[in-house]
Length: 255
Ligand SMILES: C[S@@+](CC[C@H](N)C(=O)[O-])C[C@H]1O[C@@H](n2cnc3c(N)ncnc32)[C@H](O)[C@@H]1O
Image (cartoon, rainbow, N blue to C red):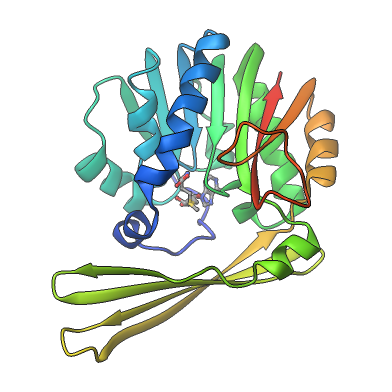
């Protein structure tokens, strides 16, 4: 199957290394467990699943997990290094391919780790929301996790504090830099690798253009796609999202 080209160039092992999964799951585990339980979720799809860590987490909460990503590298890595549960089905493809698969009537669809803005344009985001809505059963839920694209927030957090990792006599330094613009926000992922003598071995900058997805715009698009109720939570909190306070958010949509 010919898949759409992902606008995200991180290699799976480097992506997996720079995410602090333990910290992330400390909060997300309980959030999803409660959410799936209270909505009687038995069949879930994680789209833009990346290295498959959420699919693996969800597999102990529900009967069936589908995990989909347009990057062959991500899916292969997930298959080889992360997925161990038998109730997970991995599939190649992004939102375009999702519209073509026969599987539907999902109780829940998740799209996490800022994947929706990676689609780059408002048109593609709108389309993704429509496809998600169509693939859910009536009363099903969708969860989108993305950063707070309010101009002041992006400008205040233009540089993430570098993440430093020591592995196999090497030092990995991960930086992120954001450049706000009204329609598309530029994100530079900068990776520096030092050898055992602290000499620079690799210096790599990958740029991703992201749709500047403010909640006001997202809300309009989600309602136009047929979602009925939308709630926003500040990421890693149980608080209602506050656009002047939270750096990222969960949007919870009901079909
Ligand atoms: C920032 S990573 C997030 C991975 C994972 N969901 C997480 O929370 O860590 C973005 C993922 O979106 C995928 N992606 C890129 N274009 C996509 C598309 N059109 N549809 C679905 N996923 C896409 C990339 O391959 C990548 O794995």
